[in-house]
Image (cartoon, rainbow, N blue to C red; front, side):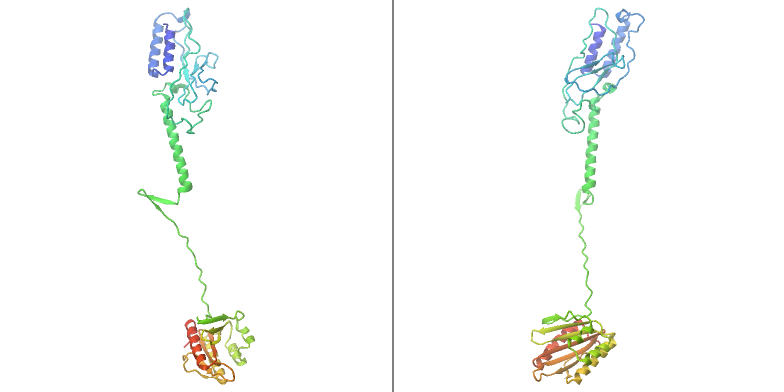
Length: 374
């Protein structure tokens, strides 16, 4: 076998992966040295070195995948660099380890009488597919089905020690890990923040109870005590100026209120469960002294009109009473001052005893919400 055939066989062995890159270089150097020591230049040409010119690596752009994935493309001297021949070994596109090989040396022609190696060298071989690669079967980490995927190794890395497949696996795994870490971090930033805190492997969920603000209405300055019966407030009375129009007071009584500086007012009518009925009138005076003076003036007016003192009433409340006569109900009426307010409690019943009982009940309820001065 000539040295050219041995060299071709050596290239074929490297392409099939049966020897390493170091063994290929060593055996190639020995073969070329042996051919040089044989004397004379191949082909009978004088003045030329038996060694091929120094080779240069050429990284060719990705080639469009031919219709037949088992075809081998040989780029001859018509390429841009006449000293380099690019051999692409056809493999099924499903093989993620496909590699382009660049044959670095253009060998001298064979001596006369020897046969030229076939043009479709190296023989078409399909290496077994490796399962479990990071780019395999639909994982979505690259354009696996493209005619010229960008992750296919090109150029001199084919001769790196340990093979290029391992490096590409490592790169693919790193890319996958980084991608998954980015997805997990993004999910944490979008949904995970502020929901829970982890400590020592235990998850503690915290929640915030919304605070409800309750607005408390200010207390009524003119409250009506709680009575056992029906109570109706006269909504038309908000100031004392509306009271004289009701024809409830004597003119002298209305004048006593006016003298005290009567302002705001409240009037409520009630009917007790016992049957007694009456009125509670609260009028705002200019001050405490004016309120107490008005209570005394009103008490004197009712005594001057035939009432007598009701002795069972508290001393702080000025109270008069009158029995029923000529079809009129018995009546018990009291006045007192309370923190600048003039309070009037007026109870009527068919007889004096019922009137006194009803008055005592209503007065006790009103004193709980508006205490008498004194």
